[in-house]
Image (cartoon, rainbow, N blue to C red; front, side, top):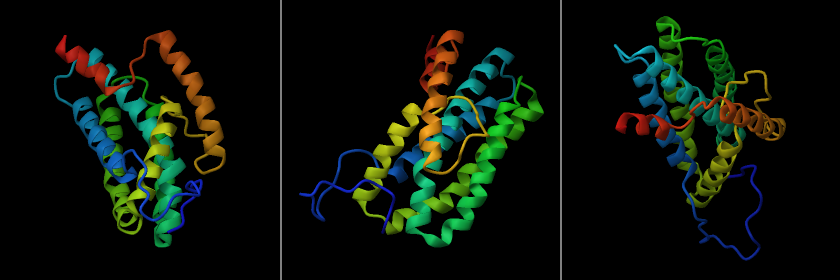
Length: 205
């Protein structure tokens, strides 16, 4: 398969296996987290303050996830599984719609929150149809190298929805980290929590 990745070191051979986690495994794990957050944010009886905290973490998790997805999963799927190109194009449109819905989420309105949660669930279901064939044709080394880049991209990614930013390389790889810096500054100033671990700490307290 041919994926848009830097070449391996000259001394590497077919047995070379880089360290790290597979892109497919990372996507699966993050999808489970997104589904958990979607369920938690729609829990009956959740108080408004608690829902706001879960929404903040869900928004940040989705924003980071979609950024990395558009930088690495989609280009790899297009390159390795050409018949997936139409599905990728549709998913990019759906990602923009999900980010728009998150951006318009100004308060814990039950109907709007339920709509966002359902969009997240549909996203997970659709992207699984991209990951499965990619896992079948890509080597372990290729998936791990993609996974390493995915993790780097997520660390630099925005934590807030920006549906107007570029969704395809190379521009998203330039714009997203710059926007991510600004988001992280805003998060630090406002005390906004953006990680699942932040919610777990509050539960244990």
